[in-house]
Image (cartoon, rainbow over all chains, first blue to last red):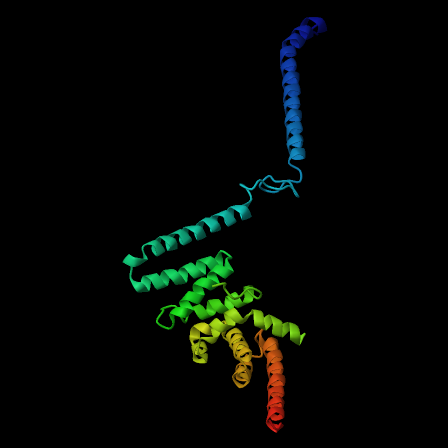
Length: 160
Length: 99
């Protein structure tokens, strides 16, 4: 029989570094996992109540980020671009074909109506009606007059 | 209520006058399908304001029953009948007097 003290201490000594390494690695991975969990918990707490786009419920977005404001700005820009074009056409009306001028008048009236300037639109439509059936859009205006009668119940007569 | 409606009718005269420049046959156009009933009503209002009651009644009665303007047209039709009858009574009164 081999004595215990001659064989075991040697074996035990050989096993110590492996055991230590195992313990150290277990502790290290455990603390890393704990840190990760803490970070995740903190992030979750910070993001609580936010929508998909990171805005808290009831919190007002900045005007530049609000999609409705952006849409409104784009629509206004598009409308004013059309209006600019119509005005450019009006500036060069002497050089243009009468049909094109009539078309520009009609679209100017429609644009002004869409921009919400109903009294202005009424003035333009009045001019088209005054031009008589020779105007290409004389018939088409009737529809817009009906639309104006809905939005202009109080001030439907233009000042001129 | 009728007084308020008549006052409002007077204010609406600008657009009504513009619509009144059109012939009723212009409303038969296919493009006018969406607004035909509204235009019958508005044109009726124009003739009503001019005192041409028969034409006004004819237009008010052409508004479709499913239209949102049907009730308004019926109301003005009634008002027109009342004014028409009063006009006749007034005329009879004037004719009966010895000037």
